[in-house]
Structure formats: C-alpha cells, structure tokens
Image (cartoon, rainbow, N blue to C red; front, side, top):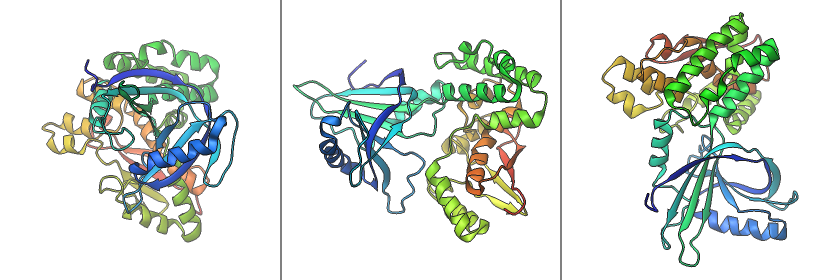
Length: 362
C-alpha cells in the first residue's frame, strides 16, 4: 500500500472533555482558529487537537461550513468564543492517510473522500449523523503528514438502540432472544452475513413483541440522529410563526445538493406527507432495472445490499427510516407523532414514502 492510500481501522473512541470554538466559515480558517484555541487552553490541553465538520448542517447561503475546532482538556474552561463540553465518543470508522512532506494541508476539502465513501459503500456500512472528526498532523523531521478522518459508525449504535427498545417494551429476556447471535452482525461481518442476522432478528422481534405499533416504535428509535441544529431552527420558526411557516422554509431549502434537506414535505390536514430523495442520484438516474432503482433510492446501507443481493428483509424494517421524521417533528412540536410507512423499497415500491400524523392542535 502506498503512502497516498487510505488505511481503514475501527476504534472505540472514549468520551472526552474538550474546549471548542464553533463558527460558520471556510476550511482555510481552521489553522488560525486552532492556533488561537491552543493558546487559550495552554497547559490545560490534554491531547491532540482536531476539527469537527458538522455534516448535514452546512446550510449557510454564502457557502460557509459549520466548523468547530476542539482540543481535549484536563478541566473545563470558558473564554470569549470558547466553551467546554463532553464530546460523545463511541465506535468510529477511521480512515488514515500518510502524505509526503510538502503535501497540501489536510484540514480542508479532501480529494480522497471518494475513496472513503467507496469503502463504506462496498462494506454496506452506514454512518451515524454526527460530526466528522478530522485530525491533521503536519510533517515533521522529513516524515509524512498524517490526516485521520473519524466517522461515527451507525451499526453499534443501532444495535444498542434496538436492544434498549426491546428491553423497554418486553423485558430483558426478550432482549436476549432478539439479540441472540448479535456478533454475526458486527462491523467485521460480511454484508450477506449481517443481512441474514438482521432478517432473523426482525423475525424474533415479531415473536417477542406481537404488537405491530410497539415494534414500529422500537425500530423508529434505532434511526440515524437528525441534525439537532436543523430541528432547533424549525422549532423556533414553528413557535414564532406557526406550522405553515416551518413547512414553507423546509420546502424552500436547497442545501441537499440543490434539493430540500427536508424532502419537500406536504401538509394534508394534520398529516405531513414526505417521500425520500434518492440516496444515490447518479445511480438512480442510470439504473436499468427496478431492483437497481430501488437500491439507489435507499439511504440504508443494510437494505441496499439486501436488495442488490436479492435477499429478503421484512418491509417492517423501514419503520427505522420513519424514526428520522419522528425525531424532526417531535423535536419541533414537543409532542409525540405517529409515523406511517406508505411505500417501501423493501415492499417492492420505487421509493419510501411516509405519513407523519400530527397531534391535535399542532
């Protein structure tokens, strides 16, 4: 493997106290902002600094990025423009590149993102919607510069959420039954082995939790985390101007490569209707079969591979996707909503479509 290739590893990163400075701006500003943060932290710094790219929240019309420089500290500190908090850790997929001395700095847009994305796609992995961590260590003494990307791996968190949901609904014995053999679904498992275990887990879930509404709530609780900044903005707009104003803002959004991040929700009485944008737009446009089209439409790495391999997975799985919308609307309203799966790629439809049923008075 040459120095320019990526090395992928899996690490369990601990929670850590960090001092952080957050702003909307440009990648070129990172080194200067980081130097300023390190000067403030001084001897309280307790580890290598890094930058957080808040993916999914890059919605500044002028093209600014949602960035945050962080440094681990021995104790919390506060200063103008700097705050401290515990940064969530967990299982991370790490991509490391070693570049020759004199190579361009690795803080900004990375020309090797496509290689990382290809690895993630090939292994049917999904990423948690949490900030992307970038550590850049400049070349020293003629050695290579090292850039490390850390992505939050969804699968371990998904399995933890499934376990917690089953136990809350049916008790620890049901949890043990549903999660039986879970090591077969780990990050190191082959995609077909993982898909087989997941299909079996859904069958065991149906036996352990006979009520379909309860199963839907369990699976919704496993979903990717919706970006909290976006929820907060829509909640503030809803409280200030009402539901229709929030919907208008969602439909005016173009931050998902020209499409609405919120996927153009439409209101019909107290029900919001929404259909997923294709996850792989280029693949969707170029697809030659219904199977390829359904796989390209799906945002779930587990499901995409299942469709392409012509394997079976219950359509009930797509309640997990419904949990994405439940987070948004319950965050906006401050009350529970009911999310219904209307169409599903696992059910043979070309897309996934959902109905969000709002409570009275919303």
